[in-house]
Image (cartoon, rainbow, N blue to C red; front, side, top):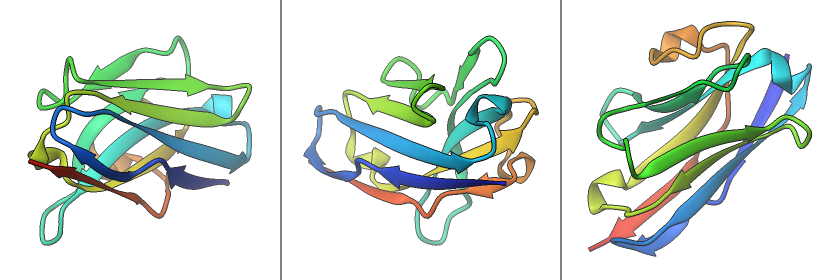
Length: 124
């Protein structure tokens, strides 16, 4: 089992940047495929980015490709999401998720563990 805690959210102006972090504890972090999702009130959870547990392959939603970068530091048991050129439509709660030795997919149901979320607000 793994516990996930997100941080780094906040208020930023459009065009600005934020870096989200997801600290993991528990079983070996390097054995988990990791993902970032976001969810607005009343809407389904939406895939943002994912990174594999072998090779570090990365995957992005079209809406964030070229603006967001997912990365991981296995020595620090931490997942990151660097968000640049933020837009007001990026405003919502962001969640990190973990899947033990699985594919870094884009469906929330593929992930076993979730953090509590961190709010990102982008003002226009």
